[in-house]
Structure formats: structure tokens, C-alpha cells
Length: 275
Image 1 (cartoon, one colour):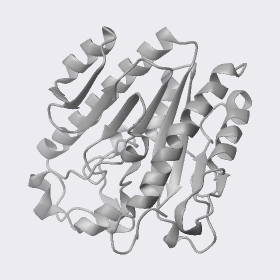
Image 2 (image 1 turned 90 degrees about the vertical axis):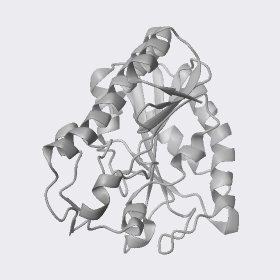
Image 3 (image 1 turned 135 degrees about the vertical axis):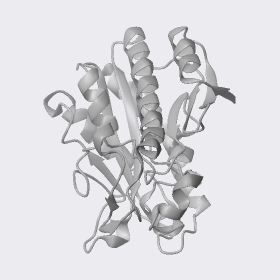
Image 4 (image 1 turned 180 degrees about the vertical axis):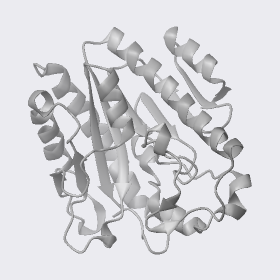
């Protein structure tokens, strides 16, 4: 893996180079093994939290972990193009637009003892802007090379906080062109439902049941590109213990192994679809 500036990453993508790199400020990673018509993204996978913010943060490390999406990069790491955040969403949220990317409160609790200085805010927002510069160049390159592009926007959510039965998989489709892509979203839901998981976990899947796909990553790509479909794909945290922070690696591995099959199958379906 390389350590690259944003300009270097952009140059490599424009030149259609294959590479794997972390940004020079360690805020996100990108891997391109081959230029293919699909991307896997994990914007909330990261846990880095800048040292200068520690003493000012009212949320504990566990409280931050609880709202992050651990292992979402691991679940798609075998695919040719993967882009993932390294920083915690509590520093800045890549799935929000820049103007609301830095929280003042989070999940009903004030986040900062004292308001962040402009210097601290700019350090975080600079990383947010850089991530989207690379995303824009990447999708533009793929749309230039292929008739259409598919993005798997991977997230997780805490199922135990819900007071009703919720699905293992939720697809958020409220911000895609459902007249054009709705049948494809339903096909992806059906595929996820076939997954075989350990310990008798039933791989249920629904559309817009717990979340509706309102994230900035999806909205940004959808608004900037006419021929790219983003599938906001959330797995409930059946792969860990939400209350202790213990990861169940056998479940993570099962998801990763089957997504290695299901994602290319979905890409083939997408390529054949008349959309």
C-alpha cells in the first residue's frame, strides 16, 4: 500500500493506474485492482479520532464505536475497487454534507465540552472535501469507461435499539430513481435474503424499513452522475455484540465470503438490465 497525496491519487485515476493507497493524512483508503463498473464503499468503517479532540469530547470510545460501522470494509475487501473512511464519524461524517458533517450533538447527547475552534473544524472539513474530490474523479472515470456504474454503499446499524423486529439487511432507496432502478434494488434485496449465516441467523431483507437511504455519499453520487446507481446497503449488527463491542469473526467472514459471490452476480444483472 502506498501513502499518497490527493493530487497523486487523482493523477493515478486519470491515468487509469491500478494502485492501493492511504491518503497522506490517513483519513481514507482506496484500492483499485482493476477498472470495473462497480465500487464498494464503506464511509463509516473508520475509528481514527484526532488526538487534539480527545479531551474535548463528551462521548466515550465505546459510545463512538456503537454508532460506527465496524467491519464494513472487511466485508467487501475482496472486490476490485474499494474506498473506505479511516476517521470516526464523530470527527466528521462523510455521509453528511460538509455544512453538517461536524456534529454538535450525537444521538441525544452533547458532543463537545466547548465548541470547536475554526482551526479544528477546518482540519476535519479539509479531509471531508478531499474524500469527495477523489470520489468524483473515480466515478467520472468509470462512467467514461462503462455505460453505467454500480456503487455498493455499505453500512451497519444497531438492531437492539429497535423495539420491533427489524431485518438483517435494509436497503435505502428513497433517493434513487426508482422508476428506472427500482426493479434492480428489489433484485439486490432478494439476493441478500439468500445469504446463509452462522448460528441460525436468518438473512431477512427489506427496503426502507429502518433507513431510507438519505446519506450524502449516495446523494452526492446520484446528483453528480446520470448513469450510476448507488445501493445503500445496511446490515444489522448481528456480526457483533452491540453492548460489549465484541466482534464475531465467523459471521463477518460468512458475510464477506458470500458478498464475494453475490456482488458480482448483481453487477452482471445490472449490466444486462435495460436502464
